[in-house]
Image (cartoon, rainbow, N blue to C red; front, top):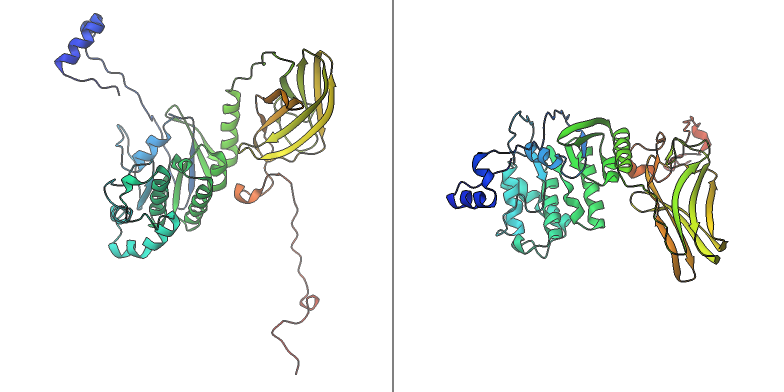
Length: 397
């Protein structure tokens, strides 16, 4: 809700800027960060919250953390809550890391003895042994996040709320935090995670809530909800044709053949056929062409190259057929290039991205599923004990 000062000087200044405001009265515009959001999270469940920036995810976590009071409605929570919302929340800048750890534990309802028992483990996880007696106002944002996460995760809350703060830390520590959140979930505690890193959501969450414009747009299993979100985000990108300039330029790309759902969506496994349209303005002699397929984390899934490419002016299609590309569901991007020695002719991050909407057939957690969606068959067959010989502990007299 927008707020204005009640001082006379501010009212007069506002009147001089816009005299019509004198006759409009003091009208306030109401903005609902969340409206009609209803959800229930079971004990031991890992729930992911996804959505655009400003959709209301953080506001929801602040309500659950008792930081923000809802205008209407209520939140009923059973269990001790540990929250890691944003850098700066919950720590006193003048206190040392040690003092803040004990303060946070006391706020969670833990005794001094309980905190002391976990303290060394917290410091080791945060990797702050040399700085634990330093006031946290002197910490970098990365140090702050390491300590805040270590405290929130190790003081054994029944409910752990985590916002997009892990993006501040380095990649190695992010992986460490994800592993710890997995441990918390496996211990039967409840985790609610907000993240724009959809691989983190896929890896950790059993169920996902998609919030858009302060309301629940979709709720359901992780795989289907995240795929629907990725599809909408991809459709909202600008996929206009590129303006032609220079010696040559790639214009657009599309999937070919029957093994496709639409021009940029692949529904199932099998042969992958794709074409890239390029307009050549000047003759090209002996150029180098490269192609790569990337996942959302910019891992190179597949790549190839061709040398001695010669093209006359006009339109040309670069057509690829790949005999089997068993990709997991998600959003992928193509990159195509043309080089003349050390001189770049064109280097295009293709738009729109390619959506793969096949049904996953590997492990339900991304952590163990790998890059490829390869089906398998398991048979468990009884084996006679005499096949493997006598037990190592047995001996003959």
